[in-house]
Structures are given as C-alpha cells and as structure tokens.
Image (tube, one colour):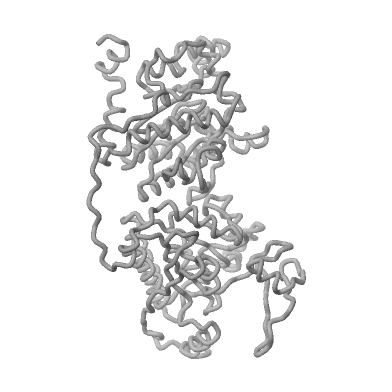
Amino acid sequence: MVEVEIPHNAEPPAWVRCDSCVTLIYAKRFTRALKVCPDCGSHTRLTARQRLEHLLDAGTAVPLDPVECEPDPLGFSDTRPYVDRLVDARAATGQRTAVLCARGTIEGRPVVVAAMDFGFLGGSLGCGEGALITAAAHTSLRMRVPLLLVTASGGARMQEGVLSLMQMAKTTNALAELDEAGILVISLITDPTYGGVAASFATLADVIIAEPGARLGFAGPRVIEHTTGETLPEGFQTAEFLLSHGLVDDVVPRAALRATLGQLLALQPAPDPEQAVDPEPAPEPDAPVSAAPATTAGGAILRRPEELTGGDSWATVQLARHPDRPTTLDYAAHLLDGFHELHGDRIAEDCAAVVGGPGLLNGRPVMLIGHQKGGAGLVERKRRRFGMPNPGGYRKAARLMRMAAKLGLPVITLIDTPGANPGPDAERTGQAGAIAANLRLMARLPVPIVAVVTGEGGSGGALALAVADRVLISANGIYSVISPEGCAAILWKDAAAAPTAAEALRVDARQLLELGIVDGVVPEPPGGAHTDHPRSAALLGAALTAALNELDPWEPERLLRDRSSRFHRFGTAHNLSVERGAL
C-alpha cells in the first residue's frame, strides 16, 4: 500500500513513499498513475469522492439526496462518546457518512454508484450507510439502470449495536428487488472489505471484480489465526487468492476499471432519457411478437442430411479431437465485442475447464459459456484438464446462466469435452448433482439457448451445457454417450475396436442430424476447423446469428414449451419412426 502523509496545514509533499517496495515516487507522477505505485503496482486507498471522480464520466455526477438517520441511536460511549468520533470523522473527510452516492455515466453508460470510504471510521456499516446503500439501490430500480457498489470496510459499526447488524438485511433486501427487476448489480472490491459488508451486499452482485491486492473476507486474518491457531497461506483473502478459489470474477487494475465497467454496463440497455429522471416511469407496452421465425441467412446452418457428405466416423473422431481446433476463448476473441471472462462458482473454485462471460455478437448482448480444452502447449491443456470440468465448472456455468436470465440475455454454449472429470475429488464434491442441477436449470431458463458441439461432445459432461432450444454441431464434431474407445473396451472387450464402435454409435454430424439429435450443422473450412480459425469463427457466427434470429421473437412461455417438447420426444415410438424414415 502507498501511504501519502501530509502534515497538518502543510503543502502536499513533492515526493511520496511506497510502503510496499519503499520506492520514492514523484507526487505528480503518483497522481497521474491514479495512486498506483508505478514500480510494484501497489494500489493505495482512495476516498469515496476520489472514486466517484475517477469512475464517472467528467461532468455527469449528480449526487443522490441525503438520508437523515439518528446519529447515535444507542447513546454509545467507550473511551470517548460515539458522537465525538462522528464529529471527528466528518471533519476529517468532509462527509456525513462512510458512503457517497451519485448517478452518472461510465463510458457513456448510465449507472448509480455507491462508494464507501475507509477513512470514515474504517468504512464501517451503520444506519446511515445502510440507508444510503438502500437509497442507491432504490434509485437504480426506479431509473432501471445498473448499480455499482464500491466497497471498503472493516465491517459492521459496533457503536450502533444490533441496529448496525440490521443494515445487512436491509441492503440485502434492496438488492433482491434489483434481482427480481432484472437490474444489473456490480461490486468493485477495494482494500479492505470485511465483516458485515462482505457478508451482505458486497458479495451479492451479479459480477464481482476486485482491485489487485484487495482483501475480502468475513473474519480478518488475525482473528482467524488467533481463533484457530493456524498459520494462513501467503496471500490469503487477497483478490488473487479469491480469484483462484472462484470467489470473484476478475482482478482488474485501477487504470483498466473504467473500460471494464463500461463493457459490463453495456449489457443493460440504456433507459429512455425522459424516463430516466421520472420517479414513476410508465410501463412500456409489450412488444409485438412476430407470427413466424425471422428469415435466416441461407446456408448458415445445414439442416438436411443430404447437404452433408458421408464420411468415415473414426476419421471424424480424430478431427473432432484435433488439438489445434478453435477453443471457446478463440471463438470469443473472433466473434464477440467487449467479451469479458467471468470466473468462479462463488463457492470454492474456478474450474478452468469451463469459461464464460458476456459480450456482443453483432451488436446483440449474449452470454457465452463453453468448455475450454486448453490452448498452446501441453501444460495449458493439463491446467484446463483437457476440457473435463469439475463440479465447480458446472456451478460456474449455472451462475452465468442465471445472470443471463436475470438480464434477458440469450445464452450460447460451445461444447468440446471428452466428458466430466472422472477424478475422486470431483465425486466427493458432487459431480452428479452439479450436472443434474444444470439440466434442470437449462430446462426452465426463460431466455433463448443455442448450443453448439464444436468438437467433442462426451456424455453427461456435454449434455450439462446442451439442453437448448437449438442444438447444432460443427461438421467435424461428434456427440456420444460414451467414447468409442470406452464402448469398444466394454462391448468388444478390445480397445482396438474403437473405429467399429464409432460407426455403431453414430457419432458424426450427418448421422446425428438424421436421428434428430441435432437441429443443424455448422459448416467448417476444407480440412477442418483447425486449418483456419478466422474462417471457422465466421461460419460459427453466421450460424449463431441465424439461430438467434429464429428464437428472438419467441416469448418465454413458447421457449419453455418447445424446449420441453424437443427433449420429450426423443426415444418415443413416433419419433423413432420419423427418424428412420418410416413415416
């Protein structure tokens, strides 16, 4: 942390010292660097006013009306009366509470911001702070614009007793109203964020980002070590530690915050300017629903088996597994503007075999989720477990799907996995239940879902992302209940019979289309997707756009009804007859 000590009634010093690396920094350079040490990257604390000045577009900040609260509800006094401490805090900061709230824009996107100030009694949560956070949430709800919470706190304010505790429930309820209304909530965790703030509104946001080195937790490290007698690991509770354990979505340096927040805020359409200041905005009339699906680009999706050339199933298996095929992150880079990867299942881990986040596909906000087999090199592929998720991967996907449903974003899933992680740790942490929960969630998700098997669709690990309104497969993709090798070993008692098993399992695109398992096939460049990533991405993008154009006019009731019907018919006598051409 960088400390800037300014003697009372003295001019600011020309030089400041970084307490992390003990480097002297020219003060003006330090200010230009947003109070981040240019040598070691340590982020010093900012005041709430500085946060608003940094984050909001110049000239757009409009302070929210103050909320009057009883300043000393308990008449509390320890070594000093609480009211005296309040007077000192107000004089030192120029604020009445530890929270400042304003509405404005970030990168042109409307937002309501509630920023906490650690310099005001350690940013503790009292009745005044709870009232202001709640007022900011209600303003966000009334204006139908996202809420940004910038947290910095030591926890609940002891001097206000149980009334301080009640602020956790009050702010939580306010955020629940935003969830029900489909309003985006973002938390920016700054150092430190502990106690009642961490256990309420700070961790209930749709997206949680943190500054480098910021600490977040319920109990502080000294309390934990004193209580348990254990020595905590290096970096415990820091943003980087939390990211690796799936508890925050990203760690973003201060200089990149505005751009990152601008991308996230773009997920929610801006309200009508006149309605944005109306305290009681009139409800918008329902949009007319088109009676027929939108016309799609010809050839973007191959829908008839005769459009595909027959091939050797085993050769297709090899192409589907080619290590150079585009990954989900490759496709995101080519297809989505403003894609921002989100991390973690908010329980225990960030499974690297599943990636996802929001972005714009030809200007349309979407939530992309997919398996990530790896990237360049064996080390990276091992880190990603070759695309075989742990339970945390499915829970992360479920979290992103729920966020998409809240914001009304279509969901795109890209499937490329040998199957779920078969390890004992995955079983101990609920592999089967995590997959089942995703199947149930996707069955009732009230937004369009398009799933594409871009490579290998292995068993339940693939199906966990494939309960969709439109299920497509790349021309050289495969989809199977078991790997050909596994089938050969069990039924033929000989792994060498895998090519025979592949043909018997009917795993390739043409046969899957004939069976009705997939609704269409995405073309690939000659030789396979691995030969030309940009061209492969362009073909996939055209297919996704065509599928979403078909689904966009559908109301949630129709989506759910048709999705249920699509999967219900599999295996019925009538459907099997149709698939075999008997009718």
